[in-house]
Length: 353
Image 1 (cartoon, rainbow, N blue to C red):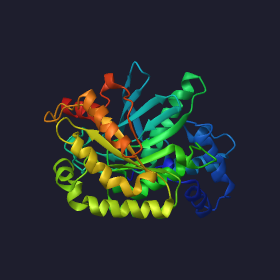
Image 2: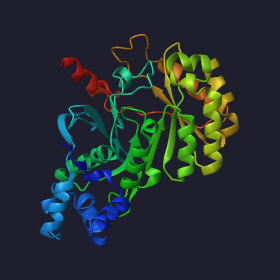
Image 3: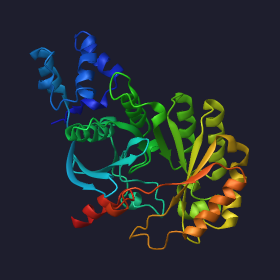
């Protein structure tokens, strides 16, 4: 028996087209969209301005629930981490973080990850499959419903597509997701409040530039030269730094939007002054549209070859970049008491099986 599709898989345009195909009036799509994303109902039967026939039609083709909450952890700083089970039994993680500027949700795009970065908890389990766009959208909807239940009027204001998986390896579903959460008739999360992170799939960075979205781009760089980057990120074999920087130049030329470069500092590996100067040299011709996000490393039990850089080393690295005119900052840590590194909670649950 074929599994029913998630209603969240459809953008508003796709939902409108589906209603027309079913011989229904197109305004039905707008009504359903409002029930899904503004009123945030839990069943089609709660959509009371639809006639019984339309509700039955929706029930026969779609479901609203592909995610089951398995574990919820709340940090002392307010960070909330959820482990969801999908209908096929796979596990994914979603994290809500609280910042002075608003509430940000980190979403997962794949079950596991094939990029294989040697410092990352997410990549410990190989990619099983891509998430559908609906499974990504539902992560946001579920978090928003939890906020609704708390009755404080809080809303998800920002999204980072930085959870388990490589978003650009699940490109079409990620683009559908972005259009759905950005839709002004629904969750209406501003494109400039959304950031997509990639490990450096150069051809997809070019495609993303051509989308002409206002969504922010972050690139996981983590090393300033090919030899070092290949040793910690195997993706660099397929997309070495020269190819990656060519794609970024294309993106900058096409969009004139700033790119954030993520750089995890690993003690004695990529955190020395020479590495900082190589990074300056790599970015100097694009410094006006570059920002380097220095990230203190979260140790992962299975990757015990790495340690966090000393505080003074981080400060020294930061100051080299700053003095050379590179915009940069050190990431504020969230949820360090609840396995903050993405993938850790999922990995621990998989080990128990």
